[in-house]
Amino acid sequence: MIIMKKITKILCIILAAVMAFSGASVALAKEKVTPVIVMHGLGGSDLFNNFGTDEESMIAQYGLDTDAMLKNQTVMQEALKLLDNGRKVNYNKLFCELGKIQGSTGFNCDENGNAQKGQGIDGEWNDSLKNHPEYFELRNFSINSIAKQVRDIVGAKNVYAFNYDWRLDVFETAKKLRKLVVAVKKQTGAKKVTIVGMSLGGAVISAYMDAYKTKNDVEKYVFVNGAQLGLDTARLFRLDFKMDKKSVLAYLKHLETAFEGGAQQSTIRAIRALGDARIGIAVNKLNKQVCSNPKMKKRFYLTVMKPWMGNCPSPWECIPYGEFDACVKQMSKIGLLDKSTGLYKKIVRYHKIQGRFKRNVKWAKKHGAQVVVIANYGTRALPLTSKKNNHTDLIIDTKYASIGAEVAQYGKKLKASGKYVSPDKVINAATCASPDSTWFFKYVSHGLFRYDTQATKLLAKMITFRGNCTVAAVKKKYGYKQFIKADKNQKIKNM
Image 1 (cartoon, rainbow, N blue to C red):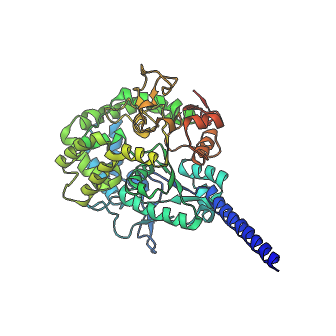
Image 2: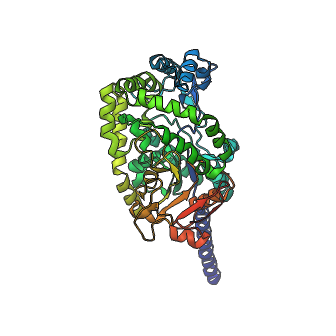
Image 3: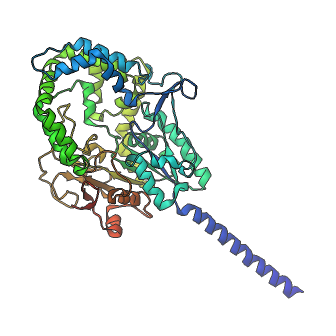
């Protein structure tokens, strides 16, 4: 009897151990796949007036009501005059009509940088994309295609989309992201998540990191062509608005091969063939009569820009840190920015976050989080400011998206050498905030990672990489180095 009791006791201990081990195995199984939250940039969510009512209507994309412009007789008459050297443009009439059209869309925020009453977006989900398969089919590029590629690896139940009103303050948006992170952890049982931000989504991650990094529940922050440090096109806020025929035509010619690796070459070539002379006339007129005329430039900002998007925080929050004071000074001087408003308080707050960003990255990495950065290049900057010769991914300057890389001017080469220097001598990644986990894809344009291509497949593998995702680790496992070149079909090879 005593022996039986001892045997029973031993069996109970063994059973308890087995159950404990099984429980631990289940817990480990839950932790094996880290949930991924993907986040779009500017234009990623549709905006609506009278949201959720019978009068609901979609706000024109980016607030640009092109149909209304084409139907407006004044706008069309004055625009056509731009193309004719012998005709004088009435800019006052043109700007006034454009301002009325843009201001009537409802795109602009109120003076405190808030959405107007009754506005909203769809797709504010807190459950996985397993329940929203339509998300994967919205477009065959951008964050949707990346999410779809990640889905193929970890399953739709482990992928979540954070949709948000991209006009608004990224700090306030980061608060909403926090709620989703908490919900994902609760639903999945995971202790940590991976957050992927494209374009403006990079700035949202920056704000999130600043506010919540001590929660220590993010395994990997992934910046894909991120706007966390801004872009030089935002220098338009300091009246750095310059155009010239040579640069514009050179930019269009350059796009034949640089845009999507040449996928749209025939279309862009046709535009150039039909319009070189007319484009040149229009550019020369705008540069001489608007860009070089302080009075007319001010009128453009106040009659077109202000009613269109002057109160939207996110464009202001894309101003590079070193340009912020000059931009605020100029826009306050001409009356586009009022320092007594809530809008000003919001953009100053993010400006300070931007200034702490590199320190936040360092802190996060020190405390166990991974920081993965994708910064593309090979395209000239938009020919609208004095920074027209910067290397960009078509929109965001490579030096900002990479968090600090030294980048040559377009058509020039660096004198630097070493393991972090690109074979074409354009990039020196040694100065990046995270040089050993930053990659550069040449000729993949901003937001145009397409589903089922080699480029997007590699990106998805980086996002879901088990272990520390570094340049050395990715090279060892997949064979790709830090500098990668893509063709028009996004087939990739090491440079």
